[in-house]
Length: 365
Image 1 (cartoon, rainbow, N blue to C red):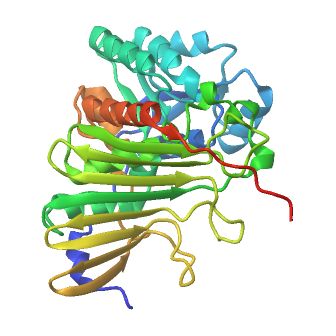
Image 2: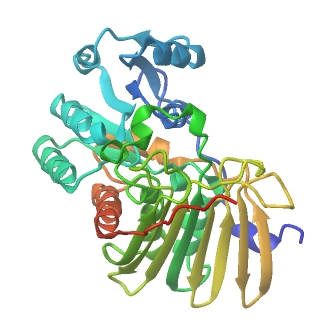
C-alpha cells in the first residue's frame, strides 16, 4: 500500500530547529551507564544547547564519550560540574537505582536534571524527588525516548490530540527488546539495581498511555512478570505485562520482553496500537517486518479508508528545544512535571503489583 496523502495535513510545517545560540544554554553529561545518554545529548545539541562537561568514574566510558564529543571537558569530579554556575542542566543515565539521588544533588545545586528512564526504582525515591522539586523549583525531566525520540510516536501525539481517530478508548503497547547478554553490565541482572522489567522498560509504555489517552491517573488492574529464558540470573525478569484503567475510562495493556530474535533487523519490533471511537492507529516504530527496514510507519484506518504514511525525517523531535526553553523560562511545554512523575509512579505501582509467574524448568530432550 502506497503512502496515503490523507495523513499529510497532520505533518508539521517544518521540523524543529535550534532554539538557542551557542553558549546560551550550557549543559553537562554525567554517569554514562546507559547508551541513552548519547540520545539525550544529541537531542539537546541539535536544539542548540552547548555541551561543556562530562563526568563518569570509569575512564573508558569517558574516552568513548569524548570520541563522540571531542570538545567536551572532562570533570575531575561530579562536584566540579555542580560548581559551574553556567551549567543550567545535567543529563545523566546512571544505574537506575541511583538516578533519584543524583537528581537530588543536581536540583539542590540549583540546576535542572534530565535523567534517562526509568527515573526511579522505588516510590520513596519518587516522593523525595517531588519534595525536592517543590523545595528547589528545579525540573526533574525524564527521557521517555520511545515517544519523545521517535518521529512516528510524535506524529501520533499530535494526530490523536487533533481527534484523528475520535475519542481514545484503549492504548496497547508492545516493547520487545534484544537482550545482547554478552555486553550487559553486572547491575543489569540485579533487581534492586534495575527495578524490575515493568519499572525499567515498562516506563516507556506507561508514559505513552498517559499521553495518547489523555488520562492523568490510572489504577493497575493486573500485572505479571517472569524469567522464562535466563535462569542463570534468578533476579532478572525477561517478560512483563500489565493492564491499567485510566481515570477517564481508557484502558491500557502493555507487554514488554527481552526476546527480540537475533534475526530481526533492529533491536526491537516496537508497536503501539491506539483504538478510538472513529478509527484506529498503529505505529510500527522501528521496522515494518517483512516489508521494509525503515521505521516510523504510521497506519490508520478510519471511515475514509486505510492509510499508511512513513514520517521519517518529517516530524523531528521538538521535546528537546521545548525542554531548553522551559528551563530558561520556567514553563512546562515539553512535558509537565506532574506527567513525568505520574508515568514513573505507574511503572513503580505496576511492578509492585506484579505476580511472579512460576516457570518450570525445561526438560532435556
